[in-house]
Amino acid sequence: MEIKKGIAVSPGISIAKLLIIDSEDYRIPRRQIEPSQRMMEIQHVRDAFKAAIGELTEFEAAQDDTEGGKIKDIFAVHLRFLHDRSLRKRITDLVYSESVTAEYAVSATMREIASHFAKQKDAYISERAADMYDIERRLLKQLLGGRREDVEHLTEEVAVVARELSPTQTAAFNRKFVKGLATDAGGRTSHTAIVARSLGIPAVVALEDLTECVSGGDTVIIDGNRGIVIVNPDEQTIQQYEEYSQEFAQLEHKLDAIREKPAVTRDGVKITLLGNIEFPDEAEMVLQKGGEGIGLYRTEFLYLNRESEPTEQEHYEAYAETIGVFKHRPVIIRTVDLGADKYTQSKRFAPEPNPFLGLRSIRFCLQNLTMFKRQMHAILRASVLGDVKIMFPLISNLQEMKQATMILRDVMDDLNEESVKYNKDVEVGIMVETPSAALTASTLARDADFLSIGTNDLIQYTLAVDRGNELVSTLYSAADPAVLRLIRTVIQDAHKAQIDVSVCGEMASEPEYIMLLLGMGIRTISLTPPMIPEIKQIIRSVTVQDCNNLARTILGMNSERQISNYLRDAARKILPEAF
Ligand code: PEP
Ligand code: MG
Image (cartoon, rainbow, N blue to C red; front, side, top):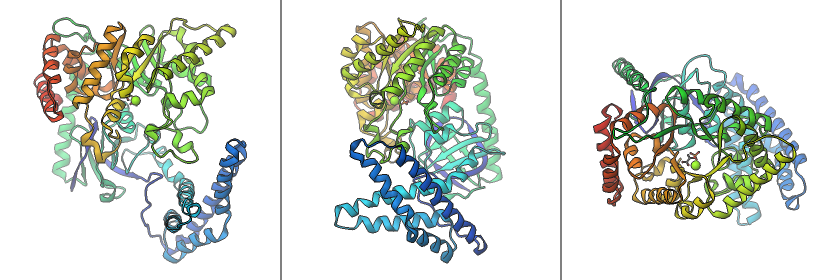
């Protein structure tokens, strides 16, 4: 039995056999095969080359000659390597002579060549190392593709263990069979954690070397409440966990009972609780948990797990389904937030060196206008079905906001010409997720109908801490005084401009922050659906007066540690079961 400690990101307990998933960028372990399997593995190598050549030839043909044909040239170089018989032979020889898997032989050979290139003084040759890694990834994608499908065709319950999972992989899980998730990498607000929470799958991340301590088929307990993973637990531990799991389910049941009760503080202040969703079918869960609408619909998930972009009609249908659940209650549709860890990197020829600071979110949309307009066309069309609002993500200056709004107006003009009905007064808001937006919130608020504070990104950009990197996860905290001051500024500026302001980052799902947010003036919260009852319970147990006092004390503190301890103690007194 081995106990590993990580970060709890999605509540619940799971006890299941584990399934290990290799991710594209992960170093492939050396796996020995029987000599009788060698010819089959060699055939896999050949097939992978053939498929990779086919894929690249198609990409090459689809490229136009923009950027001086540079992209075409790069494809051509890769194709030359893939057609090189000696390269293929070197890989198949390794499979044969050492009885290893096709993926190991590909990975080891390509990395050896890459490191040889990287050492060369000639810049042209040393830069070819990146091409070698790219070819390796392309071949591995072919070789591991089949194995990855395992997760989509499961027949028994498993706990998935991986070095790292992309939001795309997590979103593809069959919810019926995937009972828990544990990863070496990741942080509390990494998108994988967010998806696990929405799907209600217990998850622990930042376990650092878990994948090196387990083998497929081991039993694991994933404790998504305490951030613990136990590998091959003994009988007694399993029994204790089964009891604990039942107690936890009872608490959930008890909290679900307050579904019909309003989210009102003891001194009568109404708080609006909305849900964050990634897929239309989650809207029902928001309703069941007592949510009053959707405060954040992450529409980019429509793009994941598919090769082609969604059509306008597919966008429309997804929105119509969500709006159908809430009829005349608010549904805030966020325009796509692609880039960074979602979608675009795998489609790019050369991944961006700093994707979270790169062509992400609204920036990506403003450079891909056809796609952006297609989505807005669908949202506007759906706007007549209910109380739809549009929200632009990651706005970091006034110009971006004006550009995005101008494009929305263009789409409205198109709809007018096509005589298509839409709500001409649709509210348009922005997410405040960067320090630049927070510091200029008073200006942005003049042109926005509402602001929504995206604390997940606001924290990472304010503190310069990658939200998905386990090595710096202890530095990532909503309780940092710098973050709190920015949040306070945004709230005050929105109040001055008399527009709505909400919080939709994960901070709003964490019990210890609720009193503080209310005390800072927040009256609308959008959060992960499973947490709605717990947060409502806290709201119903406090007075705004208490919250104001707490906020005043907290904002006078200078240390993150002191703030977190204070908040935790205060919340523990109100809802001890949650801790
Ligand atoms: C945020 O950044 O707080 C947010 C809600 O957006 P996302 O988590 O999708 O980046
Ligand atoms: Mg964000």
